[in-house]
Length: 90
Image 1: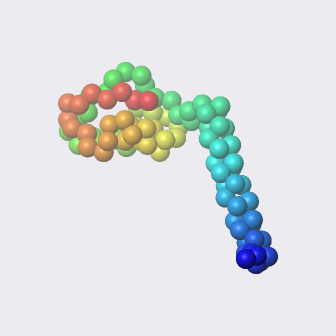
Image 2: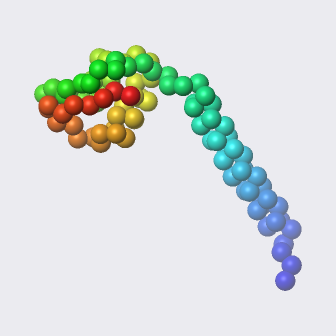
Image 3: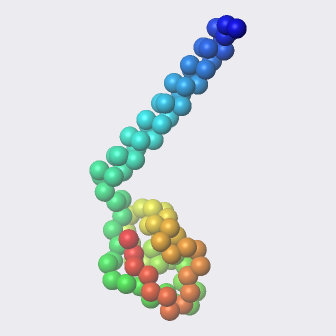
């Protein structure tokens, strides 16, 4: 049974699109890795206080891309932080 030429064309276009997205994402990841972090934080450990959030801690002790800082903090400590907990900023 022979494939219909239109189906082959659609499949090839989809494959090219998927590969283009993959390579663009890989290039962006390499660019981010080569340029280094887009933020700077104090390197001293932080003791979480009553009412503190990861966002507030990042605002007080970091300059630059706070979303990236918060993402790394959530990745390291989760979303539930408690008063008295010691965290290290990235």
